[in-house]
Amino acid sequence: MAQQITKVRQPDGTVLHLADWTSSDPLYSTVEVAAGPFTVLQAFSYGLGGAVPGSATARNSDKLDTNLRGQGGKLPEDEALMLHGLAIEAFTVGVQDGGVGYFPVDDPHVSAANMVRLQRDVIVTLRISAVKEYTRHPLSWFPAGSGVTEVNSLGVSDSAAAGGFVVANNGGDTPDDQRNFASPLLVQGGDPFTVDFTAGPGQVVGLGFQDDAGRIALRVTCNGPRKRPIA
Image 1 (cartoon, helix red, strand yellow):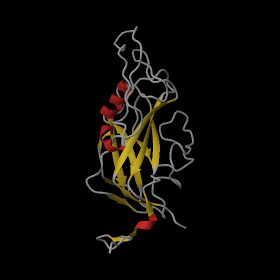
Image 2: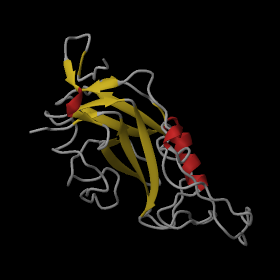
Image 3: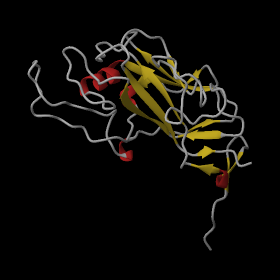
Image 4: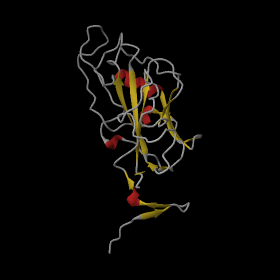
């Protein structure tokens, strides 16, 4: 007779009750990258209503930015994560993408040039328990697996008379394009937990917008089962 697995005992003796876990409501958090130098932008360092790192006016986050409860910087005590991977989307906010010498695209598209600059220069570091690094890889290692198919215009060339535009995603546009960790990472309730974005050269070199309000919003989603509060 077939049996259903309802709980799993881990090597440390912890028992996971599978009915308490779901992958239908993943955690996500957003940072915004501007042109010019920056040190570190920390996703999950703030909860819903907290200031979005890198935003032009230190604006308070809404449900498009994050669904993390509490003050941020750690997982709520009554939750847990089994991280299989990270998926990172990119959107232009504030203004049209592109500046002098760039091909502008409509907000919230990201130009192929700016996307490649981000993939070249931005490093993503996953930290659990504050000091331990579990990743230190370029942005391109964490494809979003969402968005629209890249659009290329045959009229684009490097001249003032060029027409059309070119947009791009961080990777492909299907979930099959997402990359998983070699083994899942467990984040227990109360564990310090952030995803840090830094730039190898100190900034994203050549990142271009039409004015200083321009930003690229990077929204990182935690792939894998999440234990949500059941009370």
